Image (tube, rainbow over all chains, first blue to last red; front, top):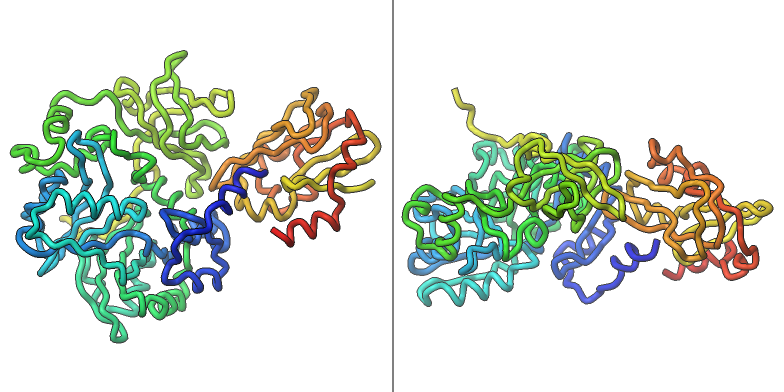
Length: 377
Length: 123
């Protein structure tokens, strides 16, 4: 029983979230993550996970980097290091993308929103300073890069997130999935997008640090909203089939290997002109040696990150993240496997503590997405 | 009958030559929701400090060490279907395994309940 507890207590020199005291007062158990002390859970991962799937959960994700790009043609500059269509991204529309190195490996994944006067990026907390350095190095001097470190970021996620937030700010009801806008509430200036990392409907809300506590209190005063920790954030995103940078994706994994080809826009495929384009465009044509897949696990024992995957005696891949899926009541995982073993239904074995556990390549998401999209006829 | 505790948050209940082992209330709180437990099979032999069982919560996997040397006489098979017993009754029905002691003298190095309570309070 030592390793796990000791690990959690090891590092103490982490930064504190603006709402650190708020989390502790609500029973949050704080652990080091991405250089911050973050709440991993309040009442328990399982209960928080299920609450979010049925009601609405409030996540403090202020560790993430909120970055503004202004100045001369930031969209053109950004397109040099991401494979998505940014120049034609509409105002108040957002897009998932990946920051690429020259070899076409993923340095980080991010959300890009075009706003009236700037591009607004949200990047991973653990990568934000490296991302900033990389952008400074890559972009022309005319592009101004600003880290919004005086802004907190919340995610409100779950099937009741829409009614919850609209009860405070009725105008947000007009947002559909991957749309965003500026709103005011009790004198606070908020930037709100309809997006998230759980597979549920929900919002991400950027707020000045000075107002963050009031906003969190207003939201948690609603019957359907509870604060939710990082533990459930991880199990929710895993069920939703969404990759976690530093685990399922890293600087060796290309977007094609990472099953993120949807993020490579049509014009960019035709024109190229982004970091690593040579490798990535070739992979789109020829396929890749390995691929990110989902795994269904037989039995109850979770198969965790690092577990090796076998077809007979041959090692054919590795689990990149895995755990127990509370919604399904069963373990699930993501893995990078050799492409020959990536088709749905492929039977493999995972080695866990010297035992072989049968697993099957399964479709993702494991739990269907329930985003708020416009109704199509 | 007396109960001993380890710094790794296991408890040992001794009755004659048979020791029952589980994890403490403090340990289950730290672990969170237990979703899987692997207990050792009858006849397995362990030295004091050997990895004897695995407990997995939603968050992480942890080893349970054998607090004393001995031979397994029974694993708690109920935990295979009801791992949540480790959360709801860690120091009772959520026990992990029973073993026959090789050397009852090893118990002297463990903590009694008062010492363990103080140990946890100081963490």
